[in-house]
Length: 124
Length: 181
Image (tube, helix red, strand yellow):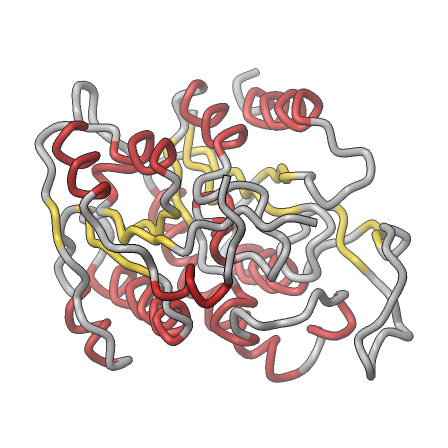
């Protein structure tokens, strides 16, 4: 059985996963580019709910990072930096895209994930 | 329309057990249906990833049905249930989209083999699938029940021998439309 994972994960602000009408559909861009998405809590959530959700995001980032998966951050989310710091993870490279082209270019400019080489994943 | 709380791996196949990723990142067949129907998408944490790690083995429900994993799931369920409660209080319709056949994320079909353990060698096949919820979904179900929150369920079906994308899509559409009547 093949495994199609990309070893690339984007932490994504909610507004790019559930865009307002006319907003940038970041999820579609990331899907087309082969990136996995870890959605960040909607800004509308109460602070305590967001804190709990961000703690779980950070814990999962920690596990991916230990295995050489590549991260980027698409959009900002208050409290993310603190949550990542608690597990010893750094805030990934950030883009706040204004267009699909800008997001696509940013993603294309990222290096290969260290895990990709380690997995010796066949290409094609 | 409402809010669909989806299994982590539906937006991030990198979280799958090794050899389980069906695509590079976002599993679009499910996401496309939700968005076409006008549903918000909200991602739940993967209960297996942080607990058992990326190098975990394929497992059945009995292997995850431990006190420690249930404590982990209850912690995750409390966080997710708080988010669901916030949406429910706004009058939103709630659907959970899980992963059928999963020991933790199955919503109507999980996996079971009471004898599995020890050296990891077993024949290929799907005989382990059985009706029921995975461990995390069971804990989330209980937490939402305590809060008096009702919801419907749907599942991604790749692990099932009967998997068919068109059928998977039709079932999801049916569940989403159930609340419109």
